[in-house]
Image (cartoon, rainbow, N blue to C red; front, top):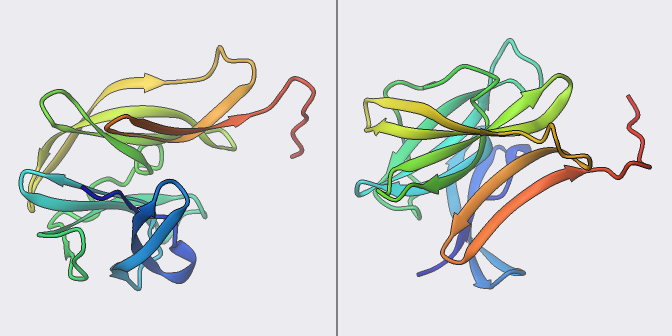
Length: 183
Protein backbone atom coordinates (compact mmCIF):
# COMPACT_ATOMS: atom_id res chain seq x y z
CA UNK A 1 0.00 0.00 0.00
CA UNK A 2 3.01 2.34 0.02
CA UNK A 3 4.56 4.25 -2.86
CA UNK A 4 8.31 3.81 -3.33
CA UNK A 5 10.89 5.55 -5.48
CA UNK A 6 14.39 4.65 -6.67
CA UNK A 7 15.96 7.95 -7.75
CA UNK A 8 19.14 8.25 -9.78
CA UNK A 9 22.02 7.90 -7.28
CA UNK A 10 24.82 6.81 -9.61
CA UNK A 11 27.11 9.57 -8.33
CA UNK A 12 27.28 7.98 -4.85
CA UNK A 13 27.65 4.42 -6.14
CA UNK A 14 24.42 3.13 -4.62
CA UNK A 15 20.87 2.19 -5.55
CA UNK A 16 18.70 3.75 -2.84
CA UNK A 17 15.06 3.18 -1.97
CA UNK A 18 12.72 5.90 -0.65
CA UNK A 19 9.14 5.67 0.61
CA UNK A 20 6.54 8.39 0.12
CA UNK A 21 5.26 9.98 3.33
CA UNK A 22 3.10 12.58 1.56
CA UNK A 23 2.66 12.49 -2.22
CA UNK A 24 4.18 14.05 -4.21
CA UNK A 25 6.77 16.01 -2.24
CA UNK A 26 7.71 14.13 0.96
CA UNK A 27 9.98 11.10 0.59
CA UNK A 28 12.00 9.30 3.23
CA UNK A 29 15.14 7.19 2.72
CA UNK A 30 14.50 3.57 3.77
CA UNK A 31 17.61 1.75 2.64
CA UNK A 32 20.33 0.91 0.17
CA UNK A 33 19.52 -1.91 -2.26
CA UNK A 34 22.94 -2.06 -3.94
CA UNK A 35 26.19 -0.54 -2.75
CA UNK A 36 29.41 0.05 -4.68
CA UNK A 37 27.79 0.07 -8.14
CA UNK A 38 27.41 3.09 -10.44
CA UNK A 39 23.96 1.96 -11.58
CA UNK A 40 21.67 4.08 -13.74
CA UNK A 41 17.97 3.93 -14.57
CA UNK A 42 17.13 1.45 -11.81
CA UNK A 43 13.63 -0.01 -11.57
CA UNK A 44 12.22 -2.28 -8.86
CA UNK A 45 9.08 -4.40 -9.26
CA UNK A 46 7.41 -7.58 -7.99
CA UNK A 47 6.80 -10.50 -10.32
CA UNK A 48 5.93 -14.13 -9.52
CA UNK A 49 6.54 -13.78 -5.78
CA UNK A 50 10.00 -12.25 -6.10
CA UNK A 51 11.31 -8.68 -6.24
CA UNK A 52 13.44 -7.67 -9.21
CA UNK A 53 15.84 -4.77 -9.60
CA UNK A 54 16.88 -3.97 -13.18
CA UNK A 55 19.59 -1.40 -13.78
CA UNK A 56 22.19 -0.27 -16.25
CA UNK A 57 25.84 -0.68 -15.33
CA UNK A 58 28.63 1.00 -17.31
CA UNK A 59 30.28 -0.90 -20.13
CA UNK A 60 34.02 -0.73 -19.48
CA UNK A 61 35.01 0.08 -23.05
CA UNK A 62 32.07 2.40 -23.74
CA UNK A 63 31.24 6.06 -23.43
CA UNK A 64 29.42 7.75 -20.53
CA UNK A 65 25.98 6.62 -21.76
CA UNK A 66 26.97 3.06 -22.69
CA UNK A 67 25.43 0.59 -20.25
CA UNK A 68 24.54 -3.10 -20.06
CA UNK A 69 21.31 -4.32 -18.47
CA UNK A 70 21.82 -6.19 -15.18
CA UNK A 71 19.23 -7.92 -13.01
CA UNK A 72 19.21 -8.51 -9.25
CA UNK A 73 16.53 -10.25 -7.17
CA UNK A 74 15.37 -10.46 -3.57
CA UNK A 75 12.47 -11.64 -1.43
CA UNK A 76 11.68 -8.04 -0.37
CA UNK A 77 12.08 -4.58 -1.89
CA UNK A 78 13.40 -3.45 1.50
CA UNK A 79 16.25 -5.97 1.44
CA UNK A 80 19.86 -4.84 1.53
CA UNK A 81 20.87 -8.25 0.14
CA UNK A 82 20.06 -8.52 -3.59
CA UNK A 83 21.37 -11.52 -5.56
CA UNK A 84 22.94 -11.10 -8.99
CA UNK A 85 21.15 -12.83 -11.89
CA UNK A 86 22.98 -15.86 -13.31
CA UNK A 87 23.17 -14.30 -16.81
CA UNK A 88 24.39 -10.81 -15.88
CA UNK A 89 24.70 -8.79 -17.94
CA UNK A 90 21.48 -9.96 -19.57
CA UNK A 91 21.61 -7.40 -22.39
CA UNK A 92 24.61 -5.60 -23.85
CA UNK A 93 22.96 -3.36 -26.43
CA UNK A 94 23.20 0.39 -26.01
CA UNK A 95 20.11 0.88 -28.16
CA UNK A 96 17.90 -1.09 -25.72
CA UNK A 97 19.69 -1.63 -22.40
CA UNK A 98 18.68 1.58 -20.60
CA UNK A 99 15.50 1.38 -18.52
CA UNK A 100 12.79 3.98 -18.84
CA UNK A 101 10.21 2.52 -16.46
CA UNK A 102 8.05 -0.55 -15.95
CA UNK A 103 4.46 -1.26 -16.98
CA UNK A 104 2.31 -4.39 -16.71
CA UNK A 105 0.02 -5.88 -19.34
CA UNK A 106 -3.48 -7.15 -18.54
CA UNK A 107 -2.05 -10.58 -17.66
CA UNK A 108 0.35 -8.89 -15.19
CA UNK A 109 3.43 -9.63 -17.31
CA UNK A 110 6.04 -6.89 -16.92
CA UNK A 111 6.72 -4.61 -19.86
CA UNK A 112 10.10 -2.90 -19.69
CA UNK A 113 10.16 0.61 -21.05
CA UNK A 114 13.47 1.01 -22.90
CA UNK A 115 15.08 4.33 -23.63
CA UNK A 116 16.09 4.57 -27.26
CA UNK A 117 19.15 6.61 -28.01
CA UNK A 118 19.19 8.80 -31.10
CA UNK A 119 22.21 10.11 -32.91
CA UNK A 120 23.77 12.46 -30.37
CA UNK A 121 20.46 12.61 -28.48
CA UNK A 122 19.77 11.05 -25.13
CA UNK A 123 16.27 9.57 -24.89
CA UNK A 124 15.02 10.12 -28.44
CA UNK A 125 12.14 7.60 -28.12
CA UNK A 126 10.74 4.65 -26.13
CA UNK A 127 10.39 1.03 -27.02
CA UNK A 128 8.26 -1.36 -25.00
CA UNK A 129 9.46 -4.93 -24.41
CA UNK A 130 7.34 -7.59 -22.74
CA UNK A 131 9.43 -9.66 -20.34
CA UNK A 132 8.28 -13.09 -21.45
CA UNK A 133 10.67 -15.09 -19.27
CA UNK A 134 12.14 -14.04 -15.93
CA UNK A 135 13.67 -16.34 -13.34
CA UNK A 136 16.92 -16.38 -11.40
CA UNK A 137 18.54 -18.19 -14.35
CA UNK A 138 16.60 -17.01 -17.44
CA UNK A 139 15.65 -13.72 -19.07
CA UNK A 140 13.87 -12.98 -22.31
CA UNK A 141 12.12 -9.90 -23.59
CA UNK A 142 10.30 -9.22 -26.86
CA UNK A 143 9.66 -5.76 -28.29
CA UNK A 144 5.93 -5.09 -28.62
CA UNK A 145 5.80 -1.40 -29.51
CA UNK A 146 7.85 1.68 -30.25
CA UNK A 147 6.87 5.25 -29.38
CA UNK A 148 8.62 7.95 -31.38
CA UNK A 149 8.17 11.68 -31.59
CA UNK A 150 9.14 12.24 -35.21
CA UNK A 151 5.82 13.89 -36.09
CA UNK A 152 5.75 16.11 -33.00
CA UNK A 153 6.95 19.66 -33.54
CA UNK A 154 7.91 20.51 -29.97
CA UNK A 155 8.64 17.06 -28.46
CA UNK A 156 12.19 15.96 -29.22
CA UNK A 157 12.50 12.95 -26.96
CA UNK A 158 11.49 11.20 -23.78
CA UNK A 159 13.23 9.41 -20.96
CA UNK A 160 10.68 7.71 -18.68
CA UNK A 161 7.19 6.18 -18.62
CA UNK A 162 5.57 4.51 -15.61
CA UNK A 163 2.05 3.85 -14.40
CA UNK A 164 0.48 2.85 -11.15
CA UNK A 165 -3.17 2.89 -10.14
CA UNK A 166 -4.53 6.26 -11.21
CA UNK A 167 -1.14 7.87 -11.96
CA UNK A 168 0.87 7.97 -15.20
CA UNK A 169 4.32 9.54 -15.08
CA UNK A 170 6.41 10.55 -18.08
CA UNK A 171 8.78 13.26 -19.18
CA UNK A 172 9.55 14.92 -22.49
CA UNK A 173 12.33 16.99 -23.98
CA UNK A 174 10.37 19.92 -25.37
CA UNK A 175 11.52 22.93 -27.35
CA UNK A 176 9.39 25.60 -28.91
CA UNK A 177 10.04 26.63 -32.48
CA UNK A 178 11.92 29.68 -31.17
CA UNK A 179 14.37 27.63 -29.04
CA UNK A 180 17.75 26.82 -30.47
CA UNK A 181 20.00 23.91 -29.66
CA UNK A 182 23.72 24.52 -29.29
CA UNK A 183 26.18 21.77 -30.19
